[in-house]
Amino acid sequence: MNITELKTAVTELSQNELAEFLEWLDEFQADRADRQWIDTVRVKIDAAVAMSENTPPIDGETFIAGICDRFRQVRESKQGYTN
Image (tube, rainbow, N blue to C red; front, side, top):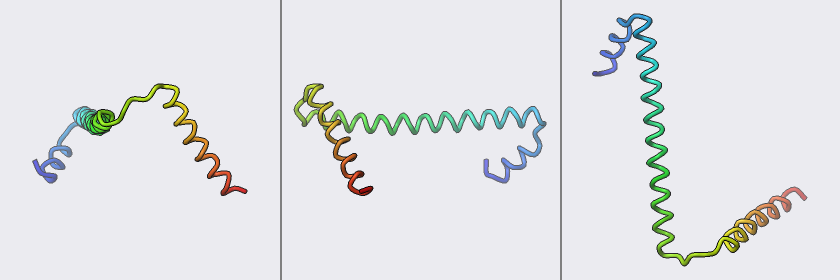
């Protein structure tokens, strides 16, 4: 169905049919967005797993310390701009 056929079909719908069509369209778009998000997350997870296979594991304390260090560095760099 091309866009002209779709426009013709939509103009021939009753109000109830049009409301159902629009509801279906919203659900379709939401499902599509969800699938795209899931695919994006799946790619990121696969990349993280692949990276972890080539990287030695670290303990939780070291991991948290690294995150805190990155936050500290960002905070210090932003303070340098405001002074």
